[in-house]
Image (cartoon, rainbow, N blue to C red; front, side, top):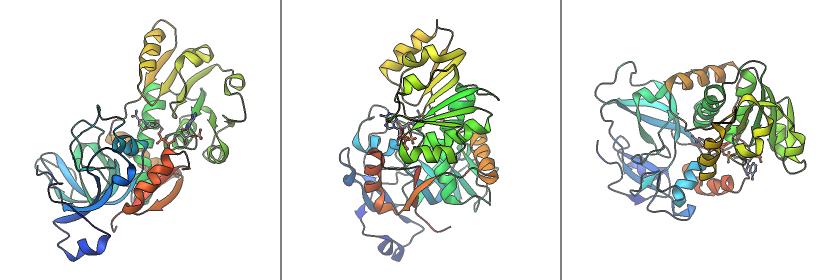
Length: 343
Ligand SMILES: NC(=O)c1ccc[n+]([C@@H]2O[C@H](COP(=O)([O-])OP(=O)(O)OC[C@H]3O[C@@H](n4cnc5c(N)ncnc54)[C@H](OP(=O)(O)O)[C@@H]3O)[C@@H](O)[C@H]2O)c1
């Protein structure tokens, strides 16, 4: 596949690009190296071509994830592609406009959503007017669901499903804690934990607690005003630490036999806890989200049936760096959606 980033020029806005041939050129938010978030610029570049098993999606909406500022700053450079310029962004919803070889079961014009993988080789992000995605890693967007909601749900929704249902083995009637309930993963996680039949306690702050109640939490705990360890006695079947703020070793005594602590970030402390948990009668797990079409389809069904992803605000490509700074500073409630193309 041809590399998308060979020919770049900074641009002030959409006008200049769209005077050109927009079937071959696009706008994208790219960074030319690790560092401050304002190093990211809206540039013009060639529209990428899909390879075998891939499709090209004209992106209508994307959304911000903490991974975007971590990658842009180089915090996780050992895990991610290091070649520049790098187009950031993971989540997308849009319309398929080109099929690579060997793709069947999907046609041009299909409205799809999903997220591109966090990988050592991928630098084709979704903060762009077009992105290449694997045809077997996306799902058709239900017509009743907006591109904004589909993009907002993709990574955090799949993360919450895989954490609660798969790693947590959450079933009807189980006692569940979800931390980080004002965030993307935690807020959707509260809704999904309820949908899977859990009795849910959400841990968070201020407006995040109102959000958690609106998402269906049975009880909320303010992590600043209350002593979380004293208030949450357990036993809990699932402790989903979406905020990656705690350790299994802190909560093991409050997990039910066979109960699971699930975190969202791998760390040395996690490895130590994982080893200890093997002889403890409880489980310690970390989610590494995968783009599974079946999970995306389930999200699509839930979005159709009543899941509403809380949207902090909708922004343009050029505004992404300043809102990534807000996300990093803990100022975002729910998800920031990026409006990119026409539907
Ligand atoms: N491993 C994976 O596959 C995977 C996938 C997706 C995301 N992630 C990671 O999961 C984490 C959450 O993602 P997200 O999209 O939900 O991020 P987010 O929208 O920034 O939400 C994170 C939430 O964590 C809570 N928080 C922040 N600092 C805290 C602290 N010191 N103690 C307790 N809670 C704190 C805040 O909620 P409250 O103020 O309400 O407590 C905040 O809203 C990020 O680290 C992200 O990189 C991992």
